[in-house]
Amino acid sequence: RIYQTTKSNFDYLKLRKLNPSERKQVIQTYLYKNQNVDFIIIDGIVDLVYDFNDLKECTEAVQWLMKLSSETQTHILSVLHTNAGEDRKARGHLGTLLSQKVETVLHIQKNKENSSQSIISAKDVRGKQFDDFVIEIDNLGNSHLFEKEEYETTKF
Image (tube, rainbow, N blue to C red; front, side, top):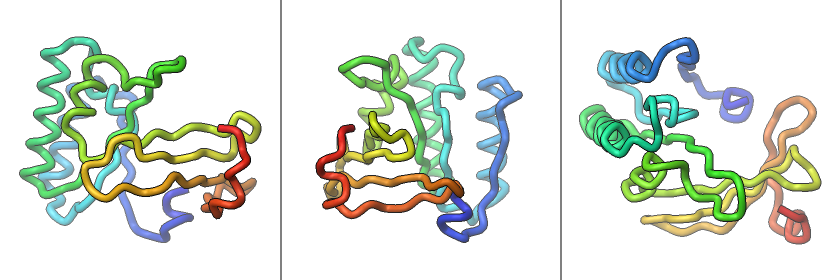
């Protein structure tokens, strides 16, 4: 889906079979060997720790990310799912620590009436604020940006 949208070249690493320590090692090795990487997405940052409620382990993981980003000059976007329920807080100590260190926290919520649509909101932004926007994934798996007028009455 990313390639279809951007037509950009990118590498995709499947780390599902690895444990958290092995995942971190693969990411670190990849970034040190590929000095031209400007941006990475870690989809499932919670998979880099054994226990997202262990304060020491989570602090070490966040410090590792900050060091890695600084040393490789790579922007790291990480995905962390929120707790279920009304509060929608980031998960555990890991979520709390990441929320304190990141540049931007986005909240993505599916449309309750149309699961192919999601609204993206800026929850916490250190830089320039932006308005909410909606994307929809069509039948071919391509994403499309909705104009504001198209989603103002939609329930999210």
